[in-house]
Amino acid sequence: KDQENMRQICGLIGDMHRKVEELSLKMNAFHSGLPVGSDELYEMDCIPHGICLIINNHRFYHPTNPEKAHPERIGSEVDCHNLVETFRYLGYRVEVAENLSSVEMKQRLREMSEVDHSRY
Image (cartoon, rainbow, N blue to C red; front, side, top):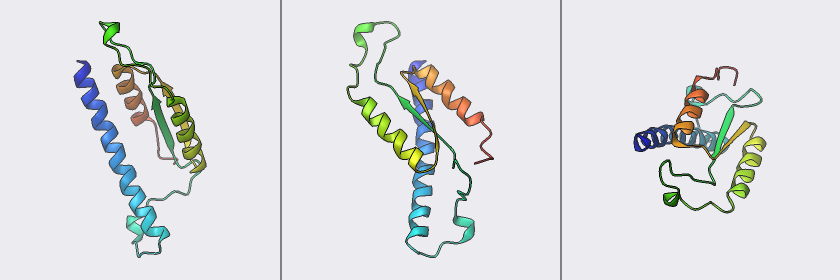
């Protein structure tokens, strides 16, 4: 079940990554002066532009055998801090969730997908 949850989480993250990449390409085209049709631009008039959810797992637990847990990710706090600062600078509201299990990650992503994002 954990493997299925992780597959679903990876799928959701992959979808989000593709959307960010697409947005980045459009923004680069816009800022470089390349002709981009208005139907190809993503409106970012609202402040904040949206919500950035950062999942920072630096401690890992194995559900049945603690000896199988991955070692702690030393330095992930610095990575998380840098991501928070970057996305705040870019105009996003940032939320950080830490040390989530695969079930909790799936739940948090589902909750985030159910938020009304129309105001952004």
